[in-house]
Length: 119
Image (tube, rainbow, N blue to C red; front, side):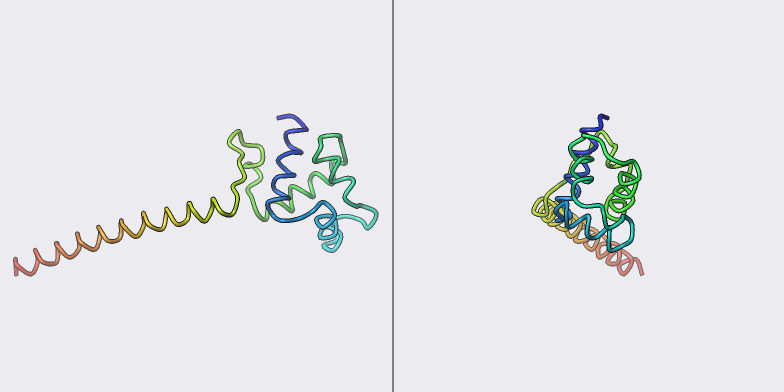
């Protein structure tokens, strides 16, 4: 993975979380993770792959680890899905689960009927 690719992925995660670079810097300053003299410029340098400070990179990875698995960032299958896609997948999954539960209910009812007939 190149430094540019890592930077692009960090940018996508930041945007997915709804932060501007400055807002993210403000959050990190508020949490005392970075000094007041940090702003959006060091974050921008990391996201564009133009360099930056390894300490800030580790702080960013630590911050993002609250929301995504760190190994996900380095995965070949990295993909950030939009909120609409997540809802659609969740609805599809919920309907699959509901159908499986209906099938299970029918199976259980049939087994209960068989037991009643046996008794």
